[in-house]
Image (cartoon, rainbow over all chains, first blue to last red):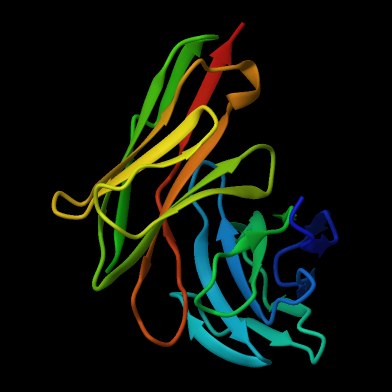
Length: 112
Length: 113
């Protein structure tokens, strides 16, 4: 196990709602990256946080937003949920942004 | 845009077989290529490759990178049922600012007893 934890493990929402997913990084890690993995696909980069600042963003709309806290844990917020947002959301932490990323177990989100 | 193509998308083998998983890539300013194993949920880190022609090994798993031909292979010898998983290949560009991994779709390996 990597020491990266995520909550909740599963979540069911309806279209239009908002959701917050949480990630606790491994001890000593200051960087958290978020990925979306649709069924049968590889993970897609959403954004990265390094020392509480956004440090790069993938091709996701602004309704995907995030935060990183002083203890380097992180949140992913998604507003106005759409059916296509149904996916496994993975966070990965690393000791610095250029170091190897270690993944958490993910949160499975289902949007109905 | 960075791109990773893995092949085959799935394969079924019997215990004891040797398998070779392929990954080809296009990336602006290559920094590294990574292999992960994904069972159920969390991808587990296997290898990071940065230099061409140098094999990385861990037990029955090994991987090598060819930066000229832009591909990597992951070999698994004497496969076991516990090797059944999705194997993900990802590339990391040299941005100097952040680390954005671009993944392939993954290869689903099923090892039959």
